Image (cartoon, rainbow, N blue to C red):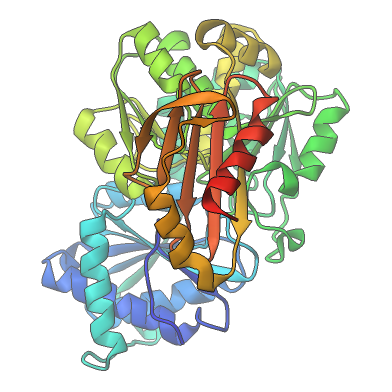
Length: 474
């Protein structure tokens, strides 16, 4: 079996291959040792889970190991959005949370995320300590402790709780739910068989606004697709929106921490456009002021909005383990990444697809514009910005060759525009004279090269992406 390694956000692996009960217990023992050695064990740990295959059973195994190590467990009594489980850390003054989810990964996978006491993604420093403790267990230096769940409940080491009431109260504090209920919107919401099912109806349904929910039932197979909110996985939502019967289409991923959007004409709104719309919502519709935080893979529209509304913009490497701490450090009003994850001040420094969906509905109502009109309004302020990304698979044995090639390549121009700057802090990013950029990054776990571009015309997208492939020689 492979080693347990935390990637951008937690450990993920194929169920029954590396993601086994044995390995989940090993991972949990490492977490318990970390909590004990850092003095956090007395505060207890929240344990949550999504709707993937056997997630509730993996969560129970996690609880058994924590309880045997003297760590009090607050175990969610049902599958819920991971932001809801994470938010519970604050209300219970817990040491953190262990959540069973593989987020937007394919249906074959499950995962384990650790959220520290500040209710965000684990920082690189925390991840390093967790992995060091896990290695000791994997190498046989530390044994896994385990207490049967029934016994742990009897000894009051495990308490079941419902994370929903506190989370929904928080949503009501952050956005005027009654205005959305009374707004008369026709919303198609695609739960993608994930943990976000039912929450939109409970939060803003029952009034003039109508919530039509797609794929709310649990289906760990996810229709054979990854529960990632991107066009190739959203055909039911795209079809629904193409009928013209809805004002806005929204979707959340498998654990409901990411959001996707489809306009009233059935066109997918890219995650970079969504970032800019959410920033516009906070800055203009709500009149808030404060820094914006973005990952290197997301939109340069953030900088233009920063100039227009006189707020600073900070950039980080990819992942909320970087975005969250920068958000806290700068007291930012928002942080976001290209994958559709957005966090907001006054909440947790972590992605929340449910809250982002509510904000997008509120934006439509406050500005009185349909989603396509919002894009036009945004572009009237910042100019046209067009984005796409391709994932290029290559033979694993060529990885070193391709990476080395990208470390030295220095083109004078790309797609006919001069290269004015090259940034190598997280992948290789080329800034072009016409305002476009091209970014090439490599997966840390698979032989995949990701090629991203944001440019000034949709016609330039395929040209820039192809030249990115050619630069890498794949």
